[in-house]
Length: 257
Image (cartoon, rainbow, N blue to C red):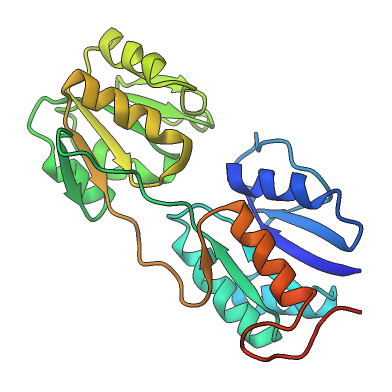
């Protein structure tokens, strides 16, 4: 039986583990960073917490006998992606990155491209009323702009004693439809949407902003990691077949038993 470690926390990671759960050739463990207390339900065993850097992850891969590493973390999780590359190389374990496509662009969308959260805060005009979906660690640039009026959607509530000025806080994940996001933007009289180019289900708010004629300040993705990249769960499944159960295109020896 082949053993796979999935670095998870995304919708795609959950779908992947659900589809792998029925394969009796495989044993899959999902690792969650521990930053989110309300992760999506995940099929199969789950470990929580960090690894102690790339060397710690490499040691885990070797000591626990993993045959493959699937990095299905968020497109903006650049540090763990880099650690996964280094750890897999050290442990001599094949690795693949599941990287969902960027948000599609349309000519009628009003998009302001920036490189970072700080760049997004700098791009906003004085007194702007914004809708922002972000984690607590990403808010410093906006908290330094007391002139901004912010509606903030977070998965996790603010820490005890944490003051977010007079912001409106909405707890939850992205709305299921663009219409629901449009209603939210209109209800709060939003003038700008700030979004990371994360792709996936968060696209509903991008569509809503375009429909409402609201500019979106879009934070570009970090560069992807080196090595094999696939764009969806089917791509990961094909990669697993090629690397664990058949001779791969590079001529490596067959890994199946």
